[in-house]
Image 1 (cartoon, rainbow, N blue to C red):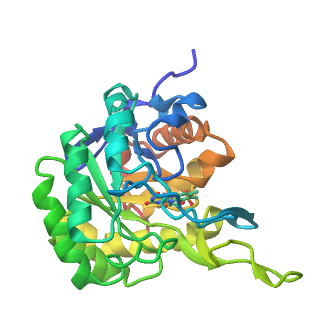
Image 2: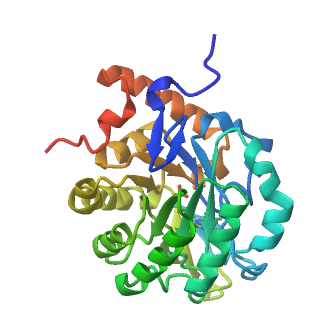
Length: 311
Ligand SMILES: Cc1cc2nc3c(=O)[nH]c(=O)nc-3n(C[C@H](O)[C@H](O)[C@H](O)COP(=O)(O)O)c2cc1C
């Protein structure tokens, strides 16, 4: 009989967040909360991440704000979301019934805004918070994620407001990732999410206009996968492993091989975004592929393969 849930060997923990699988649906790619459940069985995921939530509702950028490229997708959605109060009222009551863990993604213009939104998510019962300090598609979306000196006070302030919950910090792929990762860990992060989309642009040569209304956006999908493998490998080796802080590897995972590659590079968990838009049932295929891979590698737990890259 076909398996109906992830194999035991896939059990994973990120700080205080225990999960049935290392697979995580990435912020902004699976709905505000659990809309993905309409087209995919969430039991194949360890967790899903909410859309990044801000104090006020945001409409995001004008269209076009999502286009296909050869290497994946370019988006400049601009953090369109209902705002934290509407989320708490209309969506959060469903969170306890979701078939995987729920990570609340938080964005804002200031430390106070991050603290306010994180606090409301904790009060609503969410077990984990992810700070999106790396959005390339808003005016100040990368303010805190481009300078360790700005990032540290933000993470410390949110840490103090989220005691007992798992706190993740999501970094950009194109900055001084090692110093940012070190600052996040020293300030209390329980895990690092590596990475957000890569700043990118497409231009139509006939109209000579950018394809996205905002001009540039963020690249996701297969084109960024090898970049993220390199970042995960380096951050794991230099900063995260010595501090015993886990990494969520995120970028261009389309099948189990991509996920396994990130795990061998040093990721404890693996996010998926673009793949869910291509085929929302991808988590089942990836989960089954990872379980077979564990068996072939002769390990009882996928954790034994984290950072196991050979010289
Ligand atoms: C349409 C779209 C919307 C996104 N929205 C968010 C968001 O609200 N918050 C966030 O932290 N990342 C957001 N991201 C980035 C993804 O969570 C992820 O970091 C990125 O897509 C790389 O993973 P992938 O290659 O598997 O898609 C978004 C990505 C896409 C494609």
